[in-house]
Length: 193
Image (spheres, rainbow, N blue to C red):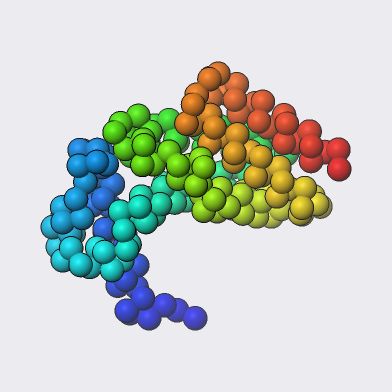
């Protein structure tokens, strides 16, 4: 069933508000972000912004989920076109880590004054992001390799997401090395089940 005109307008408005919020955060940081500035940039009232997101914390979560969705589109593409599981998993993880390292919004929120507000959305309060990324990675893997056990695939995807987030928040080794190790762990687990 096709979305109604009202639903399409609401989706478009939400995207425009997220665009405005992302631009504001990248430009001036999270702490200085005002809902009024987002409203002015999008050409709507401040009340409209609050009606859509409810709070600044909900807006932050929506921004993080939006960035995550973009990364996961690439992850899905890599996984569903790979010839072997190990290479696919490594390249998918590498794709996400590279995207995170080069995303201006994510860089701003992880290294600037916004980190205090955003880090919990990726770590201690990151259930929405972790669950969303886990489900997308699981689905893409099972689409390409339907013979894998769904429960084990989900566990491997969840561990991969958590390890990748850990590397994004607190980088250690190179992203290439991190992706290789994450893939080794996940696919080793999947191949022994």
